[in-house]
Image 1: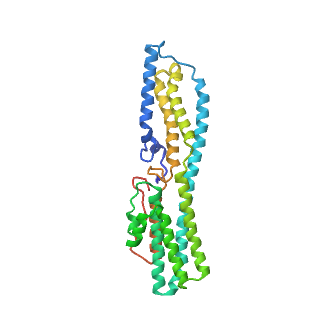
Image 2: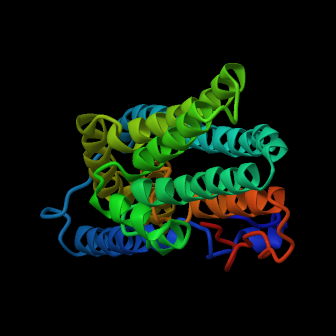
Image 3: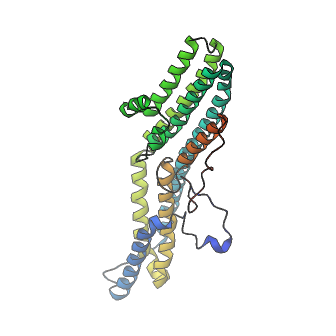
Length: 307
């Protein structure tokens, strides 16, 4: 996720880090060179490299703009829904830490049980990052698990769900021993259910992308539109056509690429959600709730990017 102060007017034109320009620069250069080639060919061989009235492209451009806007709105809705889900997880984890304070009334055994429950909650948040963001290192999870728990973790297909089952099993044992009442058990179990609901919502976003046919149609139309632009501008703009075409290509290819990044809110690109930072924040909050004082600093952006 891009985290930076709003730039001033001068900086606005020179910012590269966090901009989509680096992703689409090859396409823009290709369109610029193609436009220059078409202008040169039209001047040298007008019978071979023909032109046409560019007004017909305006209708295609308007339609393409509308469809790109629809797609980017849908992609942003996915991005914002993912952020709300992780905000809910932060809220539930902090609430669970407060709810487990009832265990400290049971003495040393209750304090240890509370530490175990919150340790597994930290592990759940880190494991959810590994599930949603492919290629993530699970060392942050394993350092929070015992050797027997780590063995179960490695063997599980849905690892965050396994950790929730471990938490539920600990709660069931506490209830069986009489450490918590039926009402207290129900209260704590509701929080576990809310964490499971967050996981299910995130899995739905990760496993259900926007319809491929819709995305493919927009990709093809955007490229076709930009390839046709020089033929419509060459008579009116001449050697100015490559520059105008490149500017229009920047707009359309930029919107297209930005939609791709927002569509995958848990990915590795700069505009993805900072779920690793949120998981680390949950861990810091819960460690503080346990009374620890030697805490790491909250995650900070590196080169204006927080992941």
